[in-house]
Amino acid sequence: MTWDRSLNWVLVETHHHQFDVSVNLDNPLSAQTLAAIRKLDPELQKTPVSELKSRLHGQTSFHLGTVNGQRCRDLDATAQKLGLRLLITNTSFISYLPIDKTNNLAWIIEDDVEGQQIANEMIAAGVEVEHCEAD
Image (cartoon, rainbow, N blue to C red; front, side, top):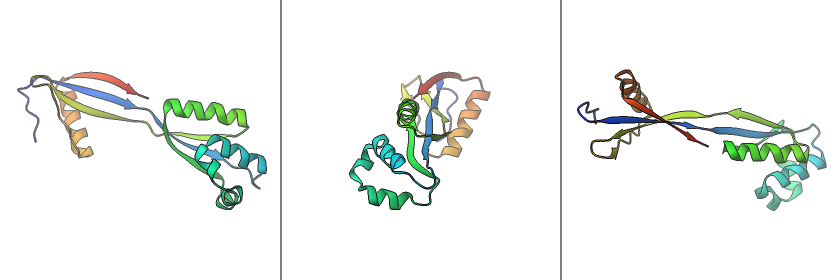
């Protein structure tokens, strides 16, 4: 599909806040750190301590996952209370959604490269851009 310039468009620019979160591990891995990690991640409470210890042996960090901004703040606060240090990497990104205001339709572009190219063309042509935050 090509961009029909005869229609009334708005481009919704969404800032997606996301973070990769890992726990820094001590070496050798202490029982305190193991217990704290299990409290930080409820899924790990189901994992036997011996299995978790074996899984983390020799590792410098344990990846908790990619989370939104609020979850990242919550994990960080809890980790501090538990005496853990987190490694947080910002992996936020921006996406664009063209909206045809003439027909009230969103144009879903599945190819990221094509979507970015069309967004750039729309911005260059002066299409209105609405900003949105996703946390």
